[in-house]
Length: 321
Ligand SMILES: NC(=O)c1ccc[n+]([C@@H]2O[C@H](COP(=O)([O-])OP(=O)(O)OC[C@H]3O[C@@H](n4cnc5c(N)ncnc54)[C@H](O)[C@@H]3O)[C@@H](O)[C@H]2O)c1
Image 1 (cartoon, rainbow, N blue to C red):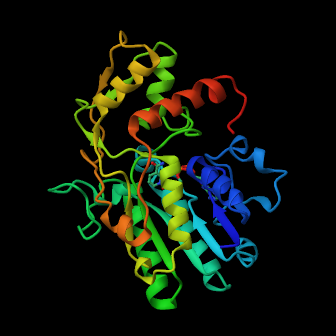
Image 2: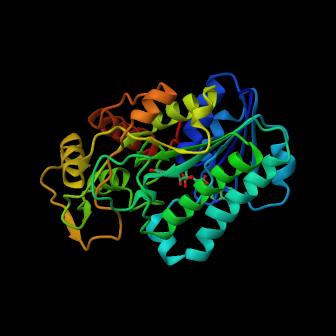
């Protein structure tokens, strides 16, 4: 892993990954069209040795030329909005599925050693039991989840048919510094912080008893690095859950945020339930065994550091670091 290419590297997770790769001494090329990503997320790397940025869509034909320099490709570019995908099925399908195919076609023709794909827990849909294991059959209930599942199938196909080592990571509700609350108002933690900080009611869709496995971004990034450096061939072509194994209700998360911000007097505003899986909780045995990775950040710590980021970087407009 010397020369890395990160699609979607100006986004929330991608920019943290880029920081980590540069810290490890890799050369890093970011390909991002800044659709939801931001220059703010990566500009601090501009003068660092080995950092390059190309503002380009993954749908563009010229990505083939750029990929020829990379040994490891991290494919994160996507429109990762569940509700938006239901209202814009064609646009999101084009980026999330055709874009992924375009990335795979570009790397197939050059000497890329590994492709790591950011998939999502949303592919599980609603299952009869928890925790969610990789051998359960997927049951998507949104366009976005179908797109991610299609991406997984393409990854598997390119491994089995062309021998391209592909790794599929199913991230579970990743949060938070640099997750812009105004771009993603359905993401619970940043948007609740934003609303409560501004003395507005946090929003709960449904009764708030739905649960999620919330994964702190540095844990997701570390899992991604573990996958990239692993020599274990068993990790190719089939999904690996990246979560904490712990599920927390939406109500409880809002309580944490209220307590940390000292805004317990502002009660939540209840809105109709969204079409989303009711519970997510990752079984992380496969990640532990095959990647030698474990999450390290508790939800409480993660929320605290997100609030610090929000107040010190986001609100003050000093840009993310
Ligand atoms: N955040 C989560 O909880 C979560 C959970 C599961 C999976 N994922 C996956 O992780 C990846 C990163 O998600 P994120 O939360 O950082 O979102 P994000 O929106 O911050 O990042 C996506 C990036 O892709 C870029 N992009 C979009 N269309 C593009 C195109 N046509 N060409 C080039 N770049 C393009 C955006 O500008 C953005 O920088 C996505 O693939 C997402 O599906 C995220």
